[in-house]
Image 1 (cartoon, rainbow, N blue to C red):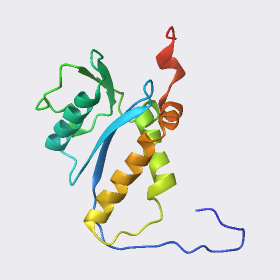
Image 2 (image 1 turned 30 degrees about the vertical axis):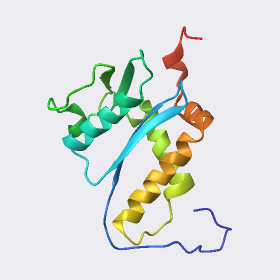
Image 3 (image 1 turned 120 degrees about the vertical axis):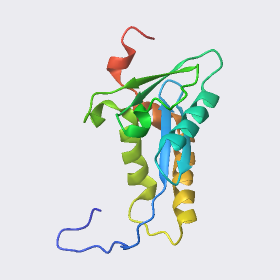
Image 4 (image 1 turned 90 degrees about the vertical axis):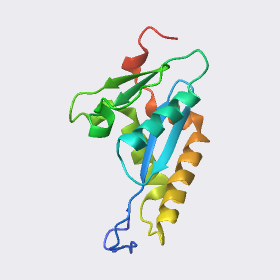
Length: 154
């Protein structure tokens, strides 16, 4: 939080710990994304996310999904949809994954410095932040596009 020099801004603080996981993917070329909010990050949640992405891939297109090496991403129990290929990034290299910048953008614009009364409020805030993001296709393209990924493409 930014503040004038010499001041101490107040920020909400909460000692409770409940989490919701926002599984999200973006398509910088189309300026769109797909996401699901889940109570846990596990194989079942990841499968639901893959199915949601597959549903939103343009007809006749094939998605390449960049992933870190979290256990729920690498498990052989996942059924990868036919219109999708999983591409695993090297370990400890979040700078290579554009969606990491999306998480920063969501926190910086809609999710930081807030205290939620209930778990449902957490999920609602995450879903609202995602809806706001997908309403800004140029922002998704700007954040997610990497020049090295578009060499030779117009």
